Length: 370
Image (tube, rainbow, N blue to C red; front, side):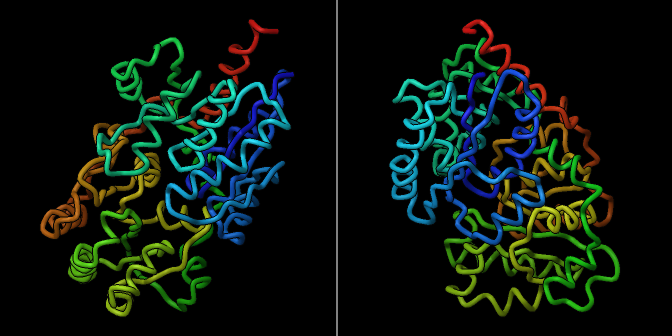
């Protein structure tokens, strides 16, 4: 059997790796080996995600933890190399665009081990985003590339990637979402777990922020809190706080003001976050994954960034790019409240079977060498 070493590193990876591990486990010609780099260093949250999504316990946990992009990437490479040498897999599979993705892909490529990239070809064309650097470089290193939308293949062809190495298979994030929707708790239970005895009696909007461009500059962050304050007069706001965002709000002296205008929640596990997303009137976010999830759920999404690497969510889905400008955000949000927002449609192959298609391609890819 051919061994595929799968890498997971941070929260956005967990939802992508879960259906892949299930499909690989059902293969009669492939075996899988799971490495968790520990880039997501909240042990309790990692455990919650692995248990909820039925991800098997990692065969290897590198325990890297936090650090600057350079330090974290270098440490992942340093700890991953001996694991790769010891196990000698036939391929390394990486997902998404976090530091673990590029670090492990780079080690594998230098060792002559084929690299498989799931969620390839997405481009924001904004090189100030660390994730964009990770995406571009990982795709250049990869031998087999799986895309979530057809425009991704066009991006890869422009960058010189052989189309024969690229396969449009759909979105593994949506595999996980569709599989878990029935398991999401009631919103009241989510709020109660966060310490709120009572919550919004009617509809609500969900807010998430974590991108450096939105939270690292106190002036920009203050303007966004002011925008949320204005919007909170029209609709209750539920705001799960990313640890980075909480630290920036504290440092800027904005936490008490944010608490006055939003229901501030701790970081949520997958099922609790899904409960909020699927019940919301709309979502305001700078998260790429949430743009996809809201499109699959049919919930209007306002993206608080000037661009997106997931254009299908705008062209076909429920997503609208509004940036961080107060007037644009409020106008778009109030349009959703008045008129219901974009209806959108489910993108092609976002049907819950992407992981099965990926494993079938990998099986065929290995067959000539057997």
